[in-house]
Amino acid sequence: MSFSIFPRKVFEVKSKISGEIVVQEQLGLYTLHVQNLIQSGGIVKGIWKKALHYVQGKPFVSGCLVLGLGGGTVVQLVKSHSSNAEITGVEIDPEIIKIGKKYFGLGEVDGLKIIQADAFNFNNIYYRSQYDLIVVDLYLGKKFPVKAASDEFLKKIKNLLLPEGTAIFNRLRTGKELGSFEKKLKNHFSRVNLVKTSTNLFFLVRV
Image (cartoon, rainbow, N blue to C red; front, side, top):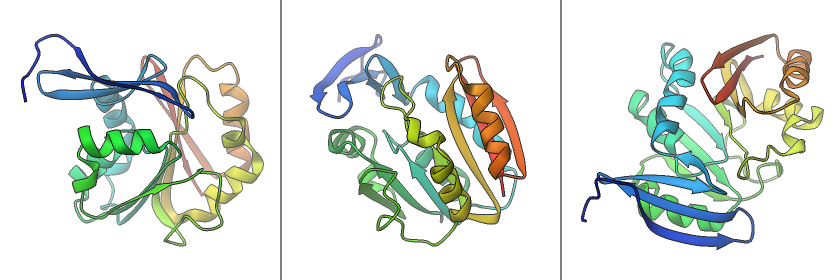
């Protein structure tokens, strides 16, 4: 592999689900961009480190569910803390799954099961009854699906969470309904904490 000092486009595809997807390389490291928004690698890793810091100070994660797998930044961070964690990654876009395996090494992560499915289909895609960490990162570009803020969805996340577990909802700080989303979370979860970064707002919830 030849490294570039400056970001260079190494792959591009037009997805029926996600729209324009671009992979860039700089100094041997890859970043995933969907609709001109970086979703994996690069600064995203630092943003997620801040959110996961509040989880990783606790006992090791044994079962993790990632809804919106992308390039797997969260998977890599969880594995760096809990190498034996069993992770189920759900991704709706087969193009992104291909990219995750080719450029981000997701096909080589021990204990990772990748499922190509709609994350709102709770009937047959989950292999554990409950998890101690659930990550909800369901953006399609800059759009956060309405279903991800529905009472039905939040109830299902709560049911999938172990009593001492944590669920993390990732939201862009540009969302106009963040206040109402926080209130809705408080209707379903006993504890709701916020972790702020310059671009993202993470809601950490406990049952």
